Image (cartoon, rainbow, N blue to C red; front, side, top):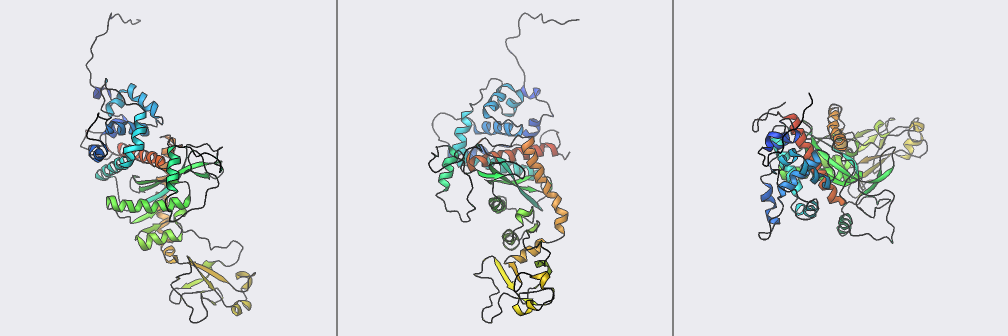
Amino acid sequence: MMGRNDQPQKPLFYTFDLDDLVPQDHLLRKIDRFLDLSDLHGHLAPYYSHTGRPSVDPELMIRMLIIGYCLGIRSERRLCEEVKLNLAYRWFCRLSIEDPVPDHSTFSKNRHGRFREAEALRFVFEQVLQSCIDAGLVGGEGFAVDASVVKADASRQRQRDDDDDWGSGPGVRDYLDGLQEDDPAPVTPAKRVSPTDPQARWTAAPGGPAFYAYSTNYLVDTDAGIIFNVEATPAHRTLEVRATKTMIERLEDRLALKTKKLIGDTAYGTAEMLAWMVQDKGIEPHVPVWKKAERKDGTFSRSHFSYDAVNDEYTCPAGKRLKQYWTRGWQSRSGAGQGPTLRYHALKKDCQGCALKEQCCPNTLRRKVTRSVHEAARDVAQTPAYQQTRRQRKQVEMLFAHMKRVLKMDRLRLRGLKGAQDEFLLTATAQNLRRMANYLGTGPPGVPEMA
């Protein structure tokens, strides 16, 4: 029988509880169990005035941002509209059905002001990380590191010329401020510079077009894939490797965690990086060594020469010696003043009459072999253990795929390196919260159990 609504008038007042309307298996209900922002007000208190009109609750803004980054809502305008309409979002933000939702401009005002001054987003990330540690989701034995390129909010068709006006956007201001700072290790100048976001790096993925981009660098625990640290850099390999040092040192300073094992790809297998891990930090490197000395023309490579550490010399396949200095009084085995590369060479008379000269040095009078001053650290990294741990690095790549495909973080909204850092911190926070919600049980609060 056809139904009909015959009630002449609906009730004027309604009584209901938002908590009853949110399903028990809703993602935000699971996340809310592990999100503790009780210390946020105390952290931000020095950055607010003690007089004047009360501001929008910073916890409300953080909860709204977490909704957006957990559920792939990239626009803050749309986020405010969704919170107005969605009852589950209101419940997560501690808003009643009648409470107003902040305007989208409030986020921009606080982001460029007190949130960055107080490192509020870094504080929230570390609070969530501590919850992961307390829940037992962290092994702490080893970490995997990697970087992923994310497109910047800059048109690839535009580039700056000398007579162009830089403008006054936040990305431009950050760039001009950075020019006043001394860079201890400058990188190769970019071929193109964006007039809207000069800090973005012109780069290209293999087989694709070039674009302006930033890199998000993750330091991930290999036990459950929890992100321990995140750092934003322009898309450049040298800066990505440098960010790894920053993340590891920050981990030691803020959480007093010592990195015992680091897993990475070839980008982290340079001699300088390996020396920093082995000699300075005592970290066991599980990375493929970056080898440049292997020849592809059929002649002997450096691996065919045996090294004698006691006498600091090489022996060629024919049994002849190669040394740095053959004249007495000029030996300097410390490598001081020679740069990062040591050069060993054989005597001319030994090479001229050698039967293996055509296989060794057919186009030169004598054979030369180079050796890095950090070669001892490279030898430590060349262990079979890497073959067993290299698969654990895929956890980082899976997080990057989740970030771009599920959370829609394939292009930045904010400009400048600070804007990229804000977005990457919120994304990593959302991924850790979602990981906790998936790994831990859905029972009553206070009784977490492994699923």
